[in-house]
Amino acid sequence: MSKILEEIGLSKNESKIYSFLLSSGTSSAGEIIDRTKTHRRNTYDALSRLIDKGLVSETVQENKRHYEATNPEYLVSLLQEKVDVAQQELPSLMSMYGRSKSRQQVKVFQGVSGMRACWEDMVRNADYLYLLGGTGLQYEYLKFYTPKWVNALNNKKIDVKVLWNSDAKHLDYFLKEWDTKSKKLPSNFITKTQIFLYSNKSAIIIWSKEPLAILIESTEINEGFRKYFQFLWRISRRMSL
Image (cartoon, rainbow, N blue to C red; front, top):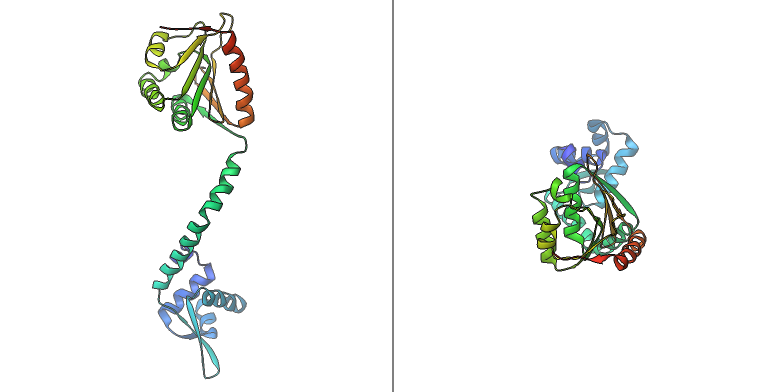
């Protein structure tokens, strides 16, 4: 019983004393100290807190203080009161959380499953999507997932621009199925590293033997990469199927 009471927010001593009073009925402080083996000072402190919480009542009998547990149903009311307070404060807490989330964050995704998690983040959060250094290798690593990802982005109807490498693979598929504005980078610009820009995020994808994604959440870094993208977009040539 004491363990359960601790899990719902009572201290160890509060739980021990409240459990004892539930089973024993009205008891003096001396009886509580003797039966629970709780230090005298800790007993009085815990009783004071339990009284403040409405879980214990205090009476005087023959010039002696006695204590009694209140109806356990009050525990539910106490917990509901905490929930109500939390809900009332939730907008303020969410605002604080949002400010902390705006700070720079870096996440690393490894392997094919990590790539998929990174791609899912794009689908959820992209309000635009720019790809610098498109390789088409995504289709080889995630052949069955890629069409679903492409369709999800098409359905969002956002601005998608892709700067493809001159040696990009599977262009027939991507240019036909993916609703993008596409250009090809100069022939001497070839890399297996891609940079996806969306929202305030920059996802650096490295197609090594075990693919790796570094996701940076930073408005400042995202804006810097977008300047690179826009410069290269201006000097690259348009593509069509």
